[in-house]
Picture 1 (cartoon, rainbow, N blue to C red):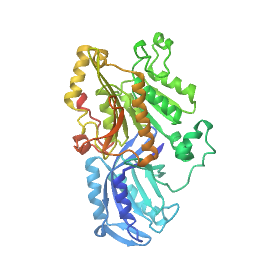
Picture 2 (cartoon, rainbow, N blue to C red):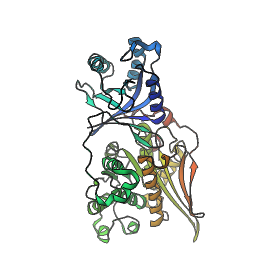
Picture 3 (cartoon, rainbow, N blue to C red):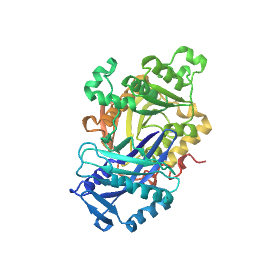
Picture 4 (cartoon, rainbow, N blue to C red):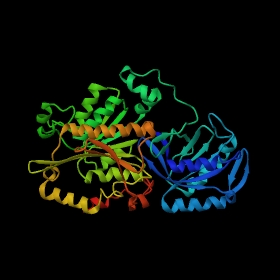
Length: 452
């Protein structure tokens, strides 16, 4: 099981500034949502409470304890709201690999059972920050043995992984020759990071199949591909890897993606999920991912990944293509790539997803059937362009290339001008971002746009 703590970047910076303010130890309480899945335990930092001098019981250069009455307030809030807490403190004197002291470990043995009693069925954790690294221990619900936290991440313009105190995995010996040129951009460590990632792709049609092909060739280690559709003659011109025999066989699009990976990069494992993105099966699979990418053509299919990005801190890179033809006249060509992540506007904030728009699409589907409701002009090279825009933003976000992906804008292509420019995402905050941010499974997944 992979164990993670995920911060929003500004919260991490505020925590670090407080903990490293001087030469004495300092403390903070992290109010967290959480997600426990088959393969992951993920803690989501949604609020940071800095322990001031009034909350400190004892403190020295090598020791700090928080007043029990001060800790009681955050504990009560967490218990009543379904959240959990992570205790954080600093060893400002520590350079290199920071470690929990024997005093820390003895204190955990006394405090953790009390936290578990007050926060039943929830994980709890503790972090210690040094000058150059962070170390964490996590206790699963009811567990007495601590697990080392594998990854501490911060989401902002980029998805940063903090240097973690040892033990460290053995370094990879070289990189496959197929990656020689791209390793010149992000190094062997960057390539190893791609190999360690699990990326979910929603929709394996025009945009999605191009996206899957790019990630296969980049060397991403695992893809979860979600689509309930099969190959038909009308979409074979756009679906990368599809073959004439797939039409007769009714091959699922997700199986085409898996076959493509097996042929072109056997090191990339593909998990095919032939299901609607709104199904429980698909949601369970997507919750195992580090990042989601959307290649769908409906609003309905964007509701779930948009909410997972905000409630579960799983960034969602959404793509869209639009070709407007009136009669026989081509009016416009456009493509869009939008990175949704905690701390920036989501598709609902932007007005792209609304109850009225989604309801209208659902009603059209009921009256006309899916194909008639979404049938629109589509051209392979434009799908490839949208996928490449997303591929570039994916790499900027994962490797912090050129400063990462701005949190307040999205990429838009205009076929008339031939330009790709950044457009403002606006500054509105929707109820999802206000009330569900970072709750994870502490709150039910509810999709009011999809209710009858």
